[in-house]
Length: 231
Image 1: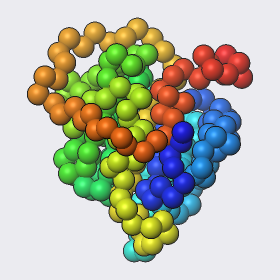
Image 2: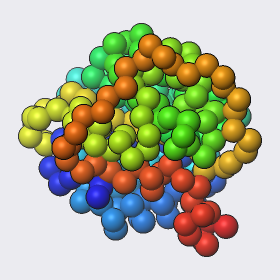
Image 3: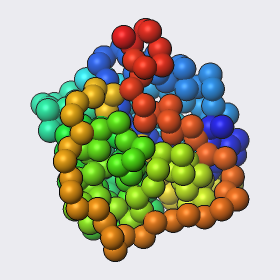
Image 4: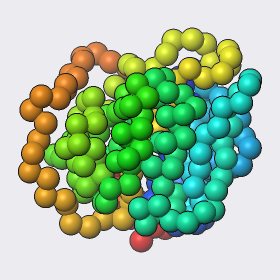
């Protein structure tokens, strides 16, 4: 299970990975998924059903033009000690897609994605955070959850189906994408953040019989645990 064939929202992924490693990841996921998975390039049009992974050591942004949305690359300074940075992407998507954005923050260390999730939420978009129990490092999603920015906090196994459930139903290729899905995590581990307050008042979706979604665990586990090429 990856996103099902015919999935009609574009997906943009930021991984905190070194240069050159992201192209390997894109090829690996492309071989396992029904959708086209590629490393992002400057100027490419973001189309429904395509999956783009930010290149290592490069920020990416989305820019809406009159007839389409395109990826812009930026080799500017580190943001939250990261390049690519989640905040850079999320903040651009809050402007380009507004309430049509769905941001997903997966396991990772640090606070990258916190400000960007706030921008998505303020624009009327939706934010999903991975829960503590299924996270290797509950830093990034934990801070988003503790900050009250997550509409939903879910275990990794339920996030893919939730994304599919949330996706639009317009046929792929018709017009500019109305919904954009964002997945983010870091592969470099550390000590799990001690976030004591769980969100008692947040909504936890537990819909049953949803279609199979992306293997989010392909992104939410340290790559080195799965492939010696990343050791």
